[in-house]
Image (tube, rainbow, N blue to C red):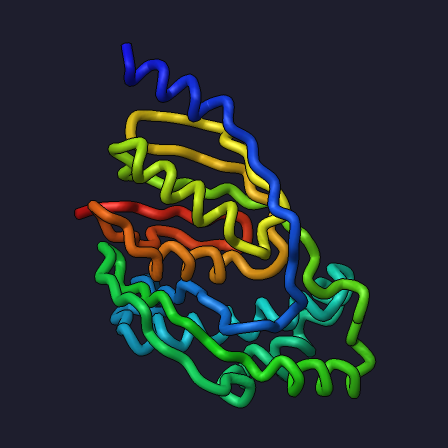
Length: 220
């Protein structure tokens, strides 16, 4: 009976954030992958790392240009930035390395040269200052929540994250909760909050990270 009361209480929660930060503050956390395919018969961890660095640069570029520019000038952006990602990476740190059935994935914290990217975009006439730090809605899926204390810890992470505008619980399953989150900034930043948080009975691991969804597993 008590468990049902707790679940009912959890389902009724809704919280709002009140502050925000500007574009480019702090490192970006991305999930790079290297998976076996016809063109990549032997994936490596190094390939996953490289993919992560490219994704980090892509995230910064996407925040500085319009969606129309991303589509119409994709080849130019690829040649100028994505194929030269190393030139715009100031530093990086591998947070987590994982062997997956099809290859490897690496969760990487990357410091990107945002000013350098901004200057290059401006010189190409592609910079759109009004598009930066846009608010996006993402799905946050957290598995392994086996106690109300752990649920409250996740709630604390969301409430204290200055980049989150608002969030609401949308789905609940045994030990698995899903939130809709309005986020200003990068999904990887939220992932890093979970990785650095000291849960009392578990440790966070990133299972999936895309621009529209973050999936976290908590395990002992």
